[in-house]
Image (cartoon, rainbow, N blue to C red; front, side):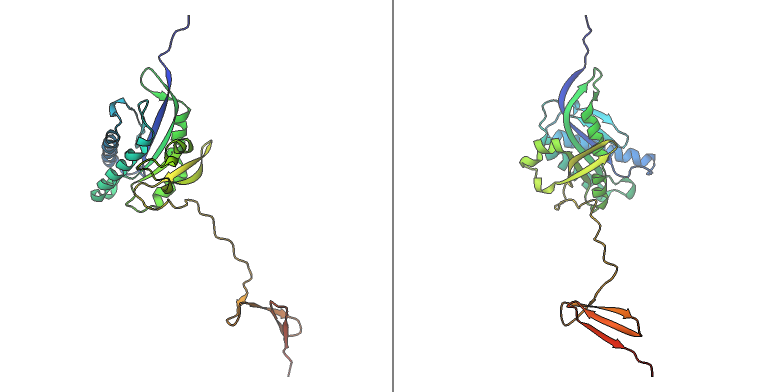
Amino acid sequence: MEEETAEEWEYRSLLAVDIERSAGRGDVALLRIREVLSAALRASIELSGIDWDACLLDDLGDGFRVTAPAGVRKTRLIHPLVHELAVRLRAHNRTAGPTTQVRVRIALHAGDVCLGPAGQATGGPLEVLARLLDAAPARTALAQAPETVSAALLVSQHFFDETVRHGFPGIDPDTFRKVTFTEKEHTADAWLHLPGHPALPADPDPAPPPSTPAQHPVASAAADRSTMINKASGHGAVYATQNGTQHIHVARKS
């Protein structure tokens, strides 16, 4: 008879958070910003009606991954959780020095994960969550945002479809912008949001301006037409307007 395993698969909501530019600050500053993030994250989770002790918490070094308890509504992870976290970090940053400022990228996803006997979670949704956390659109948006913006949120398409697009209280779909990203082998659509920032996030990859022609016509002040000047043989110059009229002046030798 086959032995039964203690592993089980459950649908869970997933959150990951990573501190922007944490490297190079030194051990003392790193310990401090980790403490700030941990305290703010715990307070935000508890204020969202989620049992902190029932969450599975993984330490990412300069951030954390949270597997929410079964049955938690995904909307709570956006509102009030994400907004509470952004507010707390913004309040900390008002009085913090340069080495202890905390700005974060946040990723949200959900799916079936395998729960092991030791309480660990594994599975494909966690890989997707990691790619969302490292995605370039969120990195660029946070780097380009005003310093008062303390977080950039990237939500998977699945999470967006089941939460954001419905416009539940506290969640405004108009403040999310669709992006496409490729991180390692993973390419997908996601939705970008800057908590506390009234405008949509700027396009992190704006299209380059169209190239200008090599030859620029000279504008006429009297009419919306242009004149080109071309050299002609015989010591002369040819003046041609756009309507096809040509004026030829020939320089004569004395």
